Length: 497
Image 1 (cartoon, rainbow, N blue to C red):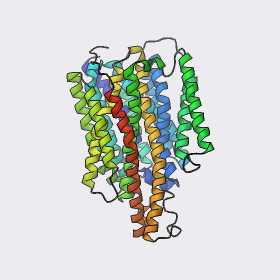
Image 2: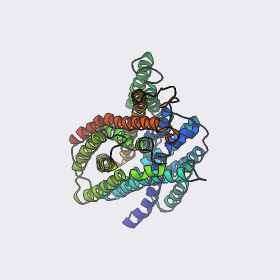
Image 3: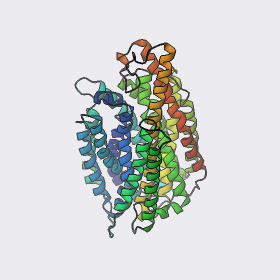
Image 4: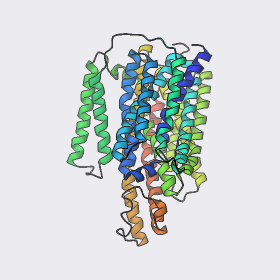
């Protein structure tokens, strides 16, 4: 494909990517209002995000394998249709359970959009040139990430619209992407005998789901050290072991284990898992920090996250352009790991009354680090595989990043609920407020404006300190990603397919 043909097709891909990322970020600042209106608590808040991540994670290897077998154009069009259907129904939700269920369907579509966009990009462009075009994907990611919370906040705060439009707003973009891709994307389809590893897909989905359910409910419904924990963790490990056994014998496995014999793929996959923990920890809980700890509107909450997205935008765009010119990518990964680790450490010191400029600087550093790592981990992997494995290898890295994000959101969401309850109880005791008179503060997502000043201050402090603890517990994950990138061997980017 010529540059002009690539750019025309890329416009459809970018619309699809924008839609996928928008669906994840647009609810960030609306979630406190959504969960409150539907009568949910902190676990519902966590699972509205986790449900999409879970289905996106579980479906990515399937989309990747299908991309190696069928028309990539047809597959991404199918994923868009699934996303549109899920979005429309999500906007009609009447309960947390209904919303969470429909978010699973949305996640299936998003998994196809995110995974297939990178696969199609790699099929069109050789690795040496891919950095420049990957920069466009990164820039789209940044724009969708910054505009999502802003759009979601405005819709939530606008009379006559409300949070339900957070799910409807992405539909026109998805339909536009469908139309553009239909007319511009021209990729050859190499047809071969189709063997979908449904057993492997089912086992990996079951193992991941059971682990996430355990992480979410542990410490609330049952103790961390309990018979239920042993049963669920043991079951998840057993399913994982069975998955490895099935994959080792499958003629066309959903995740080819031979890929992990390549050192770069093994290291970048595990590093992506830890990057996912850090990345989603930094984006999901900022909404609660600004709205519940600082009493800002949903719209202003989106505005206040701009420094992080600006850092991400600059890092992805600049690194993509420089990598295309030089062919060197490793130092971007290592520098990104250093910045993410440092930023999370600094964010762990924030409180509800920390000056905003300080929080903004910490967020900008985090955005820079994530922008340097996210796309370039995929690029390093794609540079190491044969064309027939391009879909599987790309989806493996995306799978581990989403899996890390799902684990991180679940575990850190459970941690946040626990810490907020603890800090609230301590704050009420210090202020001499009877917990019974406080109306069970901390049991759900509170309406800060309806609370008396002393109680509101206690809860603002509890949420501020609790979100800071989330960042603190994400630091080891970022550091692990940094260590892994140090051991990745830099291989010059190929200038051909």
